[in-house]
Length: 187
Image (tube, rainbow, N blue to C red):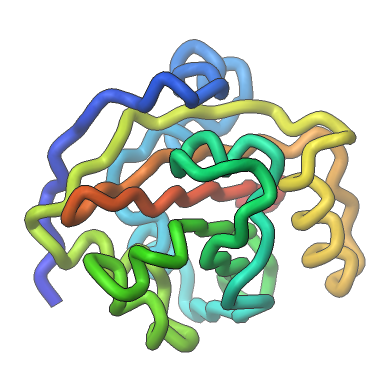
């Protein structure tokens, strides 16, 4: 599969996370938080064994600030996918993706059939895809993303306080797919 360099677009006005820099520098994980390439590809290259564990996929409520990012009314259901990226037997990243349900009948219909394939494989293979600027933040205790990461990581017996996350949107055919990635300390 050929991977294409994705052109950048501005983050939408509803985006509330700060830009990747300078936050990425303070994290001690700058190269992971600001890498514009495929995170899945990088994990595959850096490990002998890569595994994607599908935690959930289907219609669900958007997290607190995601409805506005998608231009949807609060409480509207979206397509949601949560996965755990595991390298050499160690959970490294929680991946969380959302898009409008209507996009599954249009530009993002391929997402319905991903199974255990990474979202990154789909978005980086389409040369017409555009990506918003990367945003990062250290997750607070009240963050729904931290709660998702805690639930996924608890099954593996690790601690998870103060995790860093990044997010950006991938736009194809006028529809946005938002991808958030929570990094466990072992990255």
